[in-house]
Image 1 (cartoon, rainbow, N blue to C red):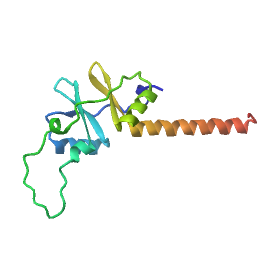
Image 2 (image 1 turned 90 degrees about the vertical axis):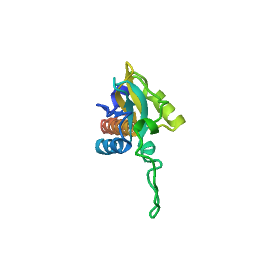
Image 3 (image 1 turned 90 degrees about the horizontal axis):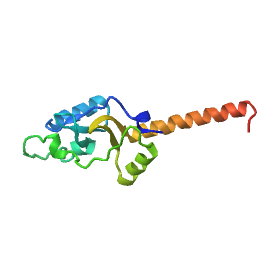
Image 4 (image 1 turned 135 degrees about the horizontal axis):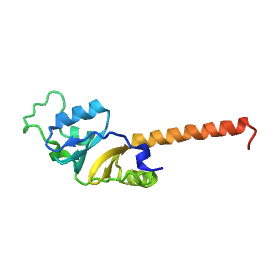
Length: 146
């Protein structure tokens, strides 16, 4: 199975100069846990996930915190991004995701994101494949095949 078969498209991207609150609102609206961060030319420069966008922004009730102006995505994003190409084997990317505790991997063509593969996309593929395998077994048993 290849990444292009399970990736989410179109990819939702964030701009490095966007405010964290704007990026958070976009992720919530789109239903994604992470998004590639791009420059003005659409080239990948990082990735921001839910943890990046909430870290340090929620304080206990009763605390009064005076902080600096709201952060930009560029200040909180991860600059070291694990990426994959559309024709890469899903198994290889999943191994990397699990080994490095990564939840999402942008799929890149020519330095630009064309999709994203999340753990949820992989889980969906596993579930779908499992359902297909079960159906094949049922059909085989119904026909008297071993």
